[in-house]
Image 1 (cartoon, rainbow, N blue to C red):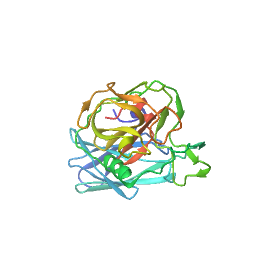
Image 2 (image 1 turned 120 degrees about the vertical axis):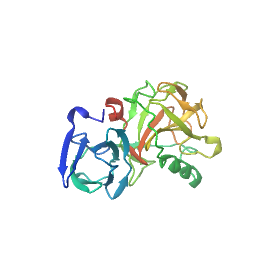
Image 3 (image 1 turned 45 degrees about the vertical axis):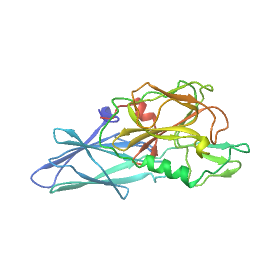
Image 4 (image 1 turned 180 degrees about the vertical axis):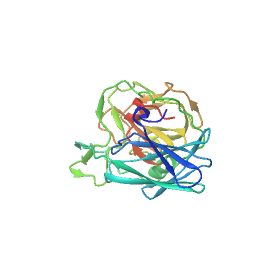
Amino acid sequence: MAIGIAIALTLIFSTSSHALQAQVTPKSPALGDTISLVTQSQTAPTVSFNGKNYPSFDLGNNRYRTLLPTTPLDRPGRLSVQVSAGADSQTIPITLRNRSFPTQSIWLPPGKNDNGSDAEFDRVDAFKAIVSPEKLWTGKFARPNPGGVTSGYGIRRYYNGVFAKDYYHRGIDYAGGYGSEIVAPAAGRVVLIGRESQGFKVHGNCVGLDHGQGVETIYIHMSRIDVKEGDIVKAGQRIGAIGDTGAATGPHLHWGLFVHGLAVDPTPWRTNSVE
């Protein structure tokens, strides 16, 4: 089932001899939501959103699913998705709701306020850009740690008194105790291992999982890593433990979820299934 299937909005457009049918969920997306577009057509559709083309993946029975990311940096209001398949094409209107995000001040002690290197961010950017064809996850994503949430998705921040422009908290922070278990919330392939000792001064010890079809998750500030690159992990499998490596003020897990390279809110992925 797609995100928010219970409130799905079905739009049917006829522009030629074949009807182009598109189902958009959630019905009323807000900043940070992942929009799922399921198209019924004879051929794989071309989908454009926010000036970028996104791939569609075959669900069988002439159905194709496209995931469209939104973030707190998007402008809320009326948007459109352009869909074309064969001789059919249509523009689907979407209203992206605004959302209020709190502001937080973070004070990093000396030695923890490193801005990171190009090499560190180049590796993370390459990880986020992966779009592998196989869908590895099934159903809802699980919680990666049982600790309480200390920082939610989308928070704006001051770092050591300086406001971070064009920044938003790209994930959720869990305050599990030092050394507490981190598990994979869904099946995936380990495609990134970063270590503080090897120059990951911001992310610290970290693991990146590829769940397929442009969906990746990252786990940072870890005290230990229990997997290696190339491993296939199952939902609920231990991948490491909470720590305070990298740019962290104390032990916690930062969990981020990316869709086609953009950090979306992980919470809807835990409460709803994506087909």
